[in-house]
Amino acid sequence: MKPDIADNLSRIEERIHLACERAGRNREEITLIAVSKTVPTDLIRIAYDLGVRDFGESRVQEAIPRFEALPKDIRWHFVGKLQSNKIKKIAPLGWVVHTLESQSQLTEIQKLEEPVQALIEVNIGEEPQKSGLLPEELPVFFESVLHCSNVHFLGLMAIGPQVDDPELMRPYFRKLKTLNDQLGGNWLSMGMSGDFEVAIQEGSTHIRVGTALFGVRSN
Ligand SMILES: *Cc1c(COP(=O)(O)O)cnc(C)c1O
Image (cartoon, rainbow, N blue to C red; front, side, top):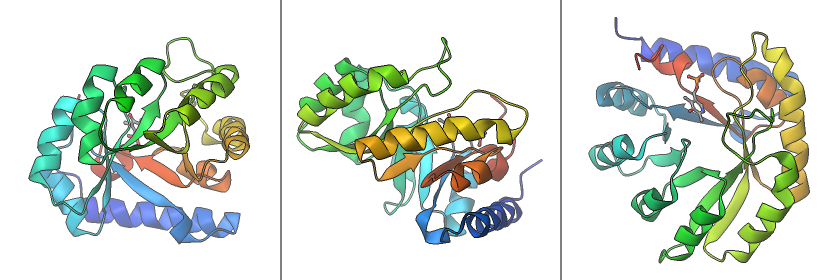
């Protein structure tokens, strides 16, 4: 069954508004990134026609054809693991990279002609299998980022641990916000379908929402 994108979007907007109201924030402070990985292009276009302009992808080979097929006023966000050898495919197209995490990525970015807007991914739950930097690795890596003239640092991003109760995410979101403030980040990319209200309360500026908009992914 096809998801009702319009209905899903209005529910999400309602949730965002409520969360902003509770947190004393303005809706304009929050960008909704529609994470469209694995979603058929026609559904992405429906979301676009409803006014969504920020989309997120996590696989380079899927991202490029979408970028080419869809309107040029979309702001594209790369939220998946980004191998350094793929950077030259994504960055020159103007994508914002949310998953900066390695020296080899920085080396590749320095080879590009244009600067890249990027966020550093933090493994905020300190989970062994997760990508991103551990909080304690952040200061040294941030120094490298500052020395990389081709990186325009926007802020921090994290995918938190899987929890049943979104309230359990609060300490992780709070910690990411503190780290982001310490580094002077303007963007804070945190919160997904199940927990973005808590993320908004804790200072998120970019929520990344897939399932709540497009339905459960088939793969
Ligand atoms: C898939 C994905 C999302 C969206 O997750 P949902 O729970 O479907 O909203 C957000 N961020 C990243 C990095 C993702 O890979």
